[in-house]
Length: 117
Image (tube, rainbow, N blue to C red; front, side):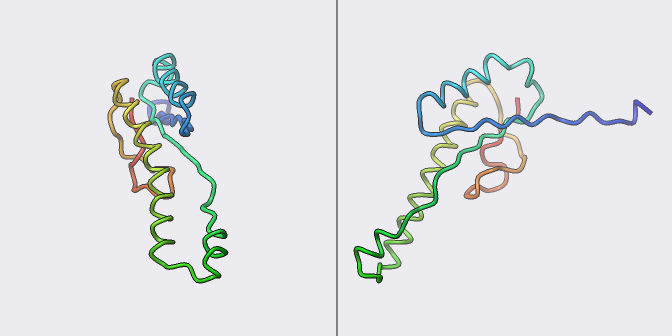
């Protein structure tokens, strides 16, 4: 019966933001916990506050151009994706390769920001 049990693969989530401390913490985690997270999926997570568009509507008397709103939303989205890209580069420097596990960013496609050791 023990032979039939499958081992459950660990998933380790590391939250990152734009700070240098966050990047150093990710490097530290990957370097110094390498043995304990071996064969685990590393999930990079980033969060950011919702985009506040109230000042745009107020400054344009309630009729902000849709192109401006779309541009601001795209820039906001890219900010989060760039953070994940920085984390991905750090993972690559440590020698981790890209995996295909569900991602945690609402802006990413499946597999973005998830690495296997």
